[in-house]
Image: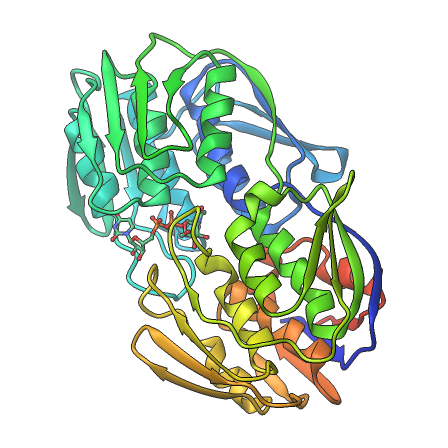
Length: 422
Ligand code: UD1
């Protein structure tokens, strides 16, 4: 398995282009299953998770062609000849469960393995199941697979989610575009990736209102047609790279970055003493003062502080002046980066879903292990601010969610290299 070596760095300077959002692309791709006509996505990110989703869609009979070095995905689901999403593919990535709603709506049946994904908590699928059942599906769990059918087709319903789950909102939204009548999703997730999915579905002929609010209304249609849709910018990649100059000093412009995607994150970043400004091309971030200041963080569904930026923010706060308290409210086991940061000299106490970080003056390089996607990038950022060399191993998690990380950070002056496993 490849490793990444990072050496403590001076100030960074330059521009980093932000890719299309992994999490948006992973829900837009299964939308191809809803129509016999082609769906083309532009601004797709080049990531291993995207390859996994292509493999999964291919196994169902869809064609996925990667064009322009992976930035364009041309998909066709004209001939869906398999309705079983196999464990061997699904276990690699939780987002595989997003084929369930579209297959059920288009074919009237689907068999989908329960997913794997990052080891950050139980991540059950009860909300997806209840929502699809409310639309008239019958779902049974057998041998680790969800067996779903809707022999009489799906029928619109009012569904109130017990929690604003991103994946459940996406599955129900996709399924209900082809259901008979009106569906209302209450307490729906409001993430920009949901808005992006709804925008794409509308381009395919779906009738959807209220996306981006907690109540989405869908008027079912008989069929969806083809479309071309650009994937929204990745707000998590954006936030991650906005932190790079906060760690090392200097000034970096994030091309394609949009403030509305990262507002709550920016509010906290500014409280640490980092300067953020909007430019014509994106967002510019500068650290001018000496040490960042402590700040308390609570993760919440959008528009709150994103759980996917918690690990990276914790890494920054390790060297802040003062004590920061981080509360993780979305996943029950998402502090696995803390013991690795402690190996680099950080002072962190974890009690359940709360981590208390006492800022130290300086982190020290160490061999560390990436335990999940966002944890792995937090260790790279910490390495940039540490004295000496940090070796981050097991970086396959990183390749799931960050395209060409060593190139993007290297281009703004970071000392970072990948060591290929031989
Ligand atoms: C998506 C993102 C992930 C992000 C998360 C929260 C993708 C591919 N992934 O994951 O990067 O961290 O949103 O912003 O878009 N839950 C249940 N029952 C369910 C579904 C979820 O209890 O049926 C719980 C989960 O265990 C978790 C919480 O709800 O504790 C949030 O999950 P959810 O919003 O569904 O996240 P994902 O869609 O899996």
